[in-house]
Structure formats: C-alpha cells, structure tokens
Image (cartoon, rainbow, N blue to C red; front, side, top):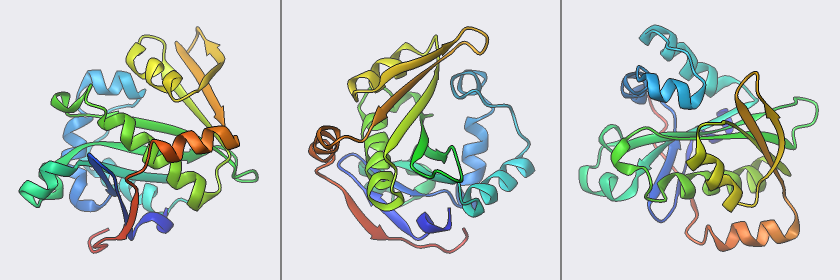
Length: 201
C-alpha cells in the first residue's frame, strides 16, 4: 500500500518499516527455508520474482506490509538490513467491504522467536489497521501444526470460526468491539507513527 510507504511504527521492542527494495535480498534468503515456507504456506520464488512481489505489496491497494526490525538491534547497528527479524501483513479480504482484514506475522530469525517480538508487531499492525485503515474485523489462517501461533492469537481473544482438514489450517477471528479496542490500546502503549526515509521503495 502506498499509504504506509512513508511511515514507520515504533513500539517498545520492535519497529515496523515499509517493505523496500533494500530488504528484498535478505527476505528472499529467509523464504528459501522449507520450514518458513511451510509455516507461511508460501512457495519458493526466484530473487527476480521476490522483487516483483515487493512492488506488488507496495502498489496494491488491498495489501499492507511492514518489515519487523528489532528496536535495540536497529539502535545499535543503525542498519535496517541487520535489524530485520521478520514481517507482518494485512490483506483486505473484500475490496467492496474493506472492514475485514486477514493478518499475518512471521519472525524469521530463530533467535528472536518466543520473545514477544511477534506478539508486539502483530498488535501494532492491528492498531494501525484499526486507526488508519478502518478495519473492524480481523481474521488469521494458521496451519494446524503451528500450535505457538494458534495459542498466541487465542491470547489476543481470537476465536476459532473454521477448520479445514483439506488445507490443514484453522481460521480464527476477532471483531473490534469496544472492549477489544480498550484491550488493544492497553497492550500497545508504546505506539508512535513517525515519518521514515522512503527512498528506494
């Protein structure tokens, strides 16, 4: 989405930045991993295809993506490439009804899993979707074997609404009620929308 191409979201432990050309090579290396392909239900792409995909995420009006940076690593190294640990996405399911979005989170660097980075990044994305994009209902689709992710979203008050044995995935959903909004704001107290360098997008 062009709307998020010039901003970054700064949280407590992570920073979300637009997915730019400079991130593609490292992202491509991540996605050569069979485990990550399985967890994200993704297919292996060539580097050239990955560059085209990055431009698609930038220009398509129904896709919003950020690269997840570790905040302390970014402050130490001052390099987005070295601070990259994953990505998070929102996909607007229906172009007519733009209130429903499917969320995704991936912490690609093994050393940063299980440290609440994915939790914070996803909640920052949900808040951005709510306040900037007008999302009122979130959905996630997770492989049945991905127990940590299923448990994480259940802790975010998502409820199971469907299960597919064919695709081996479960669908969870949450509606943005007033209570959930209060809970979300309580859990994203560190949330700053700041301008970012948008060269080389």
